[in-house]
Length: 553
Image (cartoon, rainbow, N blue to C red; front, side, top):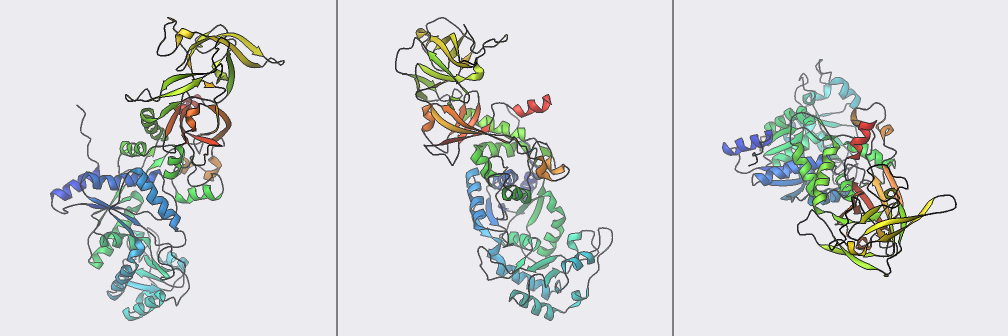
C-alpha cells in the first residue's frame, strides 16, 4: 500500500482556511504578462494554481497583466492560452488587468482624497536618490506637500494627456523610513503615451504592477494569490493598498520558482536568444519555453508529472534537467510508436532471397498490452547502420561480422558471407544469406543469436531529415556563470543529419504522434515537415548520455 502524499505548505494553508470557514471555496489565478512565451517555470505555476483549484473544487482565473503596452502583444496572449490548454487546464474566467483600468483609476483617486497619494514631478534619478538606502531612511520632497485638490487636478491632467512621458508620476504616501524599500512612497502610476493591444489610445497613464496586481486580485475575489519568492518584499504594499481601499482582502503567498540546469528562465535573456538569432524562435526545440518543448515532442503529461515531482517549496534550489528528461522518457516509453530508421547506411544484399518483397509484421509498442502491429516491407536489399558491422570485432560484439549471425528486427536471422570493398578498401556492401525458417514469430530454425538489428528495405526507404538537439548551454548553472551568459551556449546543441532512411510507415504525417526510432531515441515530426521533406526532431535520447559525458570528462 503506497503512502499518502504529504501536503505542501500552501495546501496546509488552504485546508485550514476551509476548515475555519474563512472561505467556502477557493479561487486562484494565473496572471502572466503577455510580453513573451511561457516557459517551464510558468508550467510549474500553472500546475500549482490550476491543480489547487481542482483538488479543492475551486476555480482558477486566467488574467493577463497587460499594464505595459510597449512590450505586450496579442501574439503572446494567444500563445499563452494555447500553452495552458495544451497542458490540460481550463480557466473559469479570462480577464485582463486592462479590464480594470477605470476601476484602478478610481482607486487612485480614493487614495489621493485620503491624503495617501500625491503627484511627483521629480525625475526617476531624483526619486531613486530620495529613497535612501536599506540602512538610511528616505526623504520626501516638496511635491509630497501638495494638497488634495491640486493632486486630483494634476492626476486628472495626467490622464487627459497634458504631460509627456516621465514628466510626472503618482506615488503612494506610505513610509519613507520603512526598512522595506517598496514601502518608501512607491510609484503607482506613470505616464506612457503608447498604443495598448486592447484599449488602443484610450489611456496614456498606466498602473504599476504593485498597484494593479493586488487590486485586480481583490476585484476578482481571489482567495489565494500565489507568487514566487521575489515578491515577498511586495506583500507589505499589497496588504497596505487593500487595507487603505477597504476592498476584498485577497492574500498573497510565495513559493520557490523553478530554476533548472543547463538553461535560463529569464524572459529578457530568452528574448535576447531569439532576437540575436542564437535560436530560430520562441518555439525552438532547445528553448525552455512550453511551445519549444511541445515542438520537441515533450508531452503535457510528462511536464505535469515533472512539476508534481519537484514539489512546492519555500527555498530556492536548482533542479536537474535530467529529472525532466526522465519524466519525458517514462511517458514516451509507454506511448511512443516504434519505428526503424537508419542514420548511417550500410547496404546488405541477401543473396538467397528471391522474392521481390515480403511483408513482415512488427508490433508498434511492446510496452503497450494493447499494441497494434504494422506491416513492414522486407526485400533483397536492405540498409543497416554502419556501426552495426565490424570486420574485426572485439569480444562480446553481438552485432554483425564476417561469418556472424544476427536477427533483423521482426524478420529473419542473417549470416554475413562476404564483405565487398571498393578500390580504396572502403566497405561498400555485405553479401549475406538468410535462414527462411527463422522468421520472427514463426521461428523453427532452433538457432539463437544474441544480436537484433534494425533495418530498412532499400527499395522502400523514405528519406528524411533528422535534427538532434542537446542542452542549449554547456554549463550547469547558467544564472551564476561569469560574463555574458551567451558565452556559455553549447555550440553542439543542434546537429542536423540531412538524409536518413526510414521505413514507409513514417510517411503518415501526424504532429500528435510520437516515435521511438529503435536504438536511436525518441522523435517527433516537426511542424515544418511535408510529404516531400520529412523533418524529425529528437525529443530525448533513450538514456541519459549527457550524464555519462560529464562523468567521463
